[in-house]
Each structure stands twice: as C-alpha cells, then as structure tokens.
Image 1 (spheres, rainbow, N blue to C red):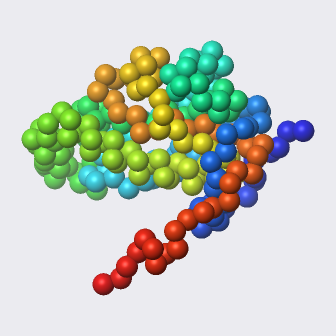
Image 2: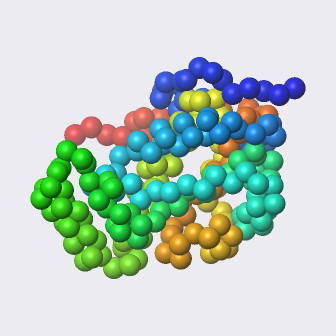
Amino acid sequence: MTIEASPEIMTVTQAAEARRSIRTFEPTPIPREHMQEILRVTGLAPSPWNLQPWRFVVVEDAETKAKLQEAAYGQAQIGNAPSVIVLYSDMSDAIDTVEETVHPGMRGAQGDKAAADIRSTFAAFSDADRAAWGFAESNIALGFLLLTAQAHGYNTSPMLGFQPEKVKELLGLPVDARIPALIAIGVGTEEGFAHHRHPLERIARFV
C-alpha cells in the first residue's frame, strides 16, 4: 500500500515535535511540485547580506543514487529513499552574482555600494574562512529543510558521513564547494525513535 504525504501543512512546532530520523521509505517518487515547494520554503532561511550561499542537487536517478551511496559508506537510506538532496554551499557563485541578492529596494548607487561592500568584505577572508562562512550559513538552511519537509508530510534522514570529494566529482560540484549534509527524503515506513532531549533547564539559562 502506498502512503501519501499529508496534504495538511504542519505548524513549525508540530513539525519539530513530529520529526524523526527515518531510514526506510516508500519507493513512490516525490512529485516535482512538492519538492520544489519544500526547497522554495527552505530558501527563506535567513542569511547575512541576503547572500544565500546554499545550493541543492536533488538526486532521483537510481544509478546516481547507487554511486552516491558508495560515497556515503553504503548508508542504506540513500538507496531506498526516492530522493536524496545534496546540500552544498558555493561562495564563489554567491559572491560573483551578489547583485542578484542585493535587495531591489536598494537601487542605483546604493545597490552598487552594497554589492561592492560585500565583495570587499569577503576579499579580506582567506579561502578557508570564506568556505567556512558559507558552510555555516548552509547549516541554517539545513534546519529549515528538515522542518519544511516534515511540515509537508515527508520524512528525512540527514547524513554527515560521506566522502565530500567523491560526492563533488559525482555531481560535478565546484571544487571549493562545501557539503553540510546529504538528506534522504520520502514517506517513511518506520516510526523512528521518540525524542529524547535535554530538559530546557539543562541547555538554557536566563540572565
């Protein structure tokens, strides 16, 4: 029996409370419009200067998924999920095309200055620091992605165990790209473990 993704959109709180890391999935493909909407909402994640360095490759092809699974130490969820999202940051592209992300409310000289200031700021960064900045920002998008997928009725399994250089070669990603995670996504066939989290007083204090 095929399990359909929920047509109801969860609230952020509902999605956070419902989300589990799921490793077995129905093989039913995710409709393209569903995936596009999940990524559109993910793209609303906050980003300093609105730079949005995150990029996505949605891997649906079975042969490509098999190669991706090899690069991820054989993790089974890559093979049985209908899609795997490769989230990566591309700071070179983000800086080269910064005019695309300067707010249209900044017109003319103001917009030109904003773009020049961003380029000047990152020109002072080392290559490693610039890549680390984009990597950190893309982890914000990762959080948005996991919650958005859950809110739309899809389960996920984010994976940090993989060989980045092999993934980049497989998908033709830029040599200076950084990959925060691979995310298996689909309709799960297991419940996963219930949340087991620190109580609030263990992780927060008010001063």
